[in-house]
Amino acid sequence: MNGERITIRQQALLRRSAELRQALALQTNVLRTPLALADRLRDGWHWLREHPELPLTAAAVLLVLRPRSAWRWSQRLWWGWHALRRLQRVAARR
Image 1: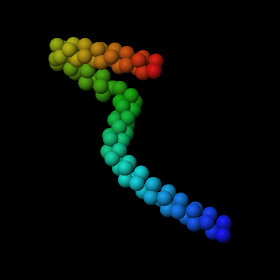
Image 2: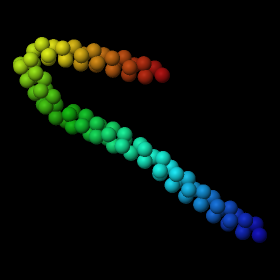
Image 3: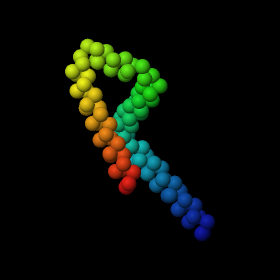
Image 4: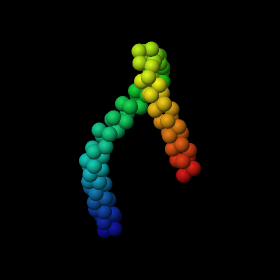
């Protein structure tokens, strides 16, 4: 009798586990698109790090053709770099 109750309880738990897995799968579908975008951004970042000649060439062309724009963009990038570094330091403290 006790073994039969354990078997029934085990089957109920297995059913509940299957239901929870299915519900979790449905809920995580919402994250599929943002995670795919994050993966593409990461892959692009890795590609740029392996091929720095492309952004450097673009910067050189911009510098030659539009020096004023290049100066403005360099200031913005410099400010962005420092802001990112500050955020990283704050995040590291927490």
